[in-house]
Amino acid sequence: MRVTPYGSVTIASLSGCVVNGQPMTEPWIAYGFETGSCSQPSGTYGIVFNTPTGYSNASGGSFFPVQLISSETASGSYNHSWTANLDKQYPYGLGSFPTSDTPDLGLFSTDTTVTLSFSANMFVMWQSSTANSIPVPLGYQTWGFSGTANCSSSCGSPSNWTATTNGTPGPVGNFVPSAPSQTSVGNNTLVDGYPTWTGVSQ
Image (cartoon, rainbow, N blue to C red):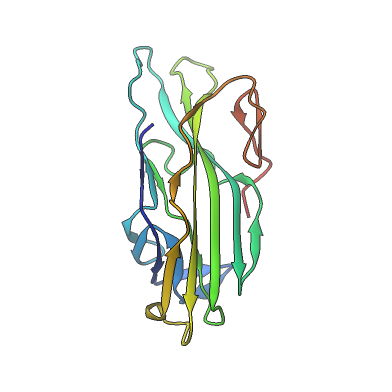
């Protein structure tokens, strides 16, 4: 599975956003480049997971993504840690490859410095078209990023924020084939190489 990562963390300005039931009009720190509205964002994704290649699929079947968040933390003037668990839904995204992710975090006007760190594992699952078949994991790609947003004054305006990318965002190591001996990856539990979860990361 080829991966296309974006090279930096940026400051985004998105309209029409709602966070925890409340309108969110402040800027965002994002991995990737985002613009437009929360309902229809545009720009460049933080990371793209392309359709698996180099396989024989004569028997039919399909690939689909499952993502587990290993860790996600915000520190600085805002502090929060999200639980290691399933990312959003099963399957991930629209349920097929290619798929993408652009993690972001809203910055309040009372914030001055926020560091967002993120680590996840994207699994490639395959399910045969045979009746009553079950999906099987083929492997996973670990990836992540860390970036810091800084503002000195009038922090409700995106133009007053700057973003610094910490390290090299994107893939961490190579694609790891699944194996029955695998019992964990990052902060998540695996069962015979299968991704498992108890809920959605929050």
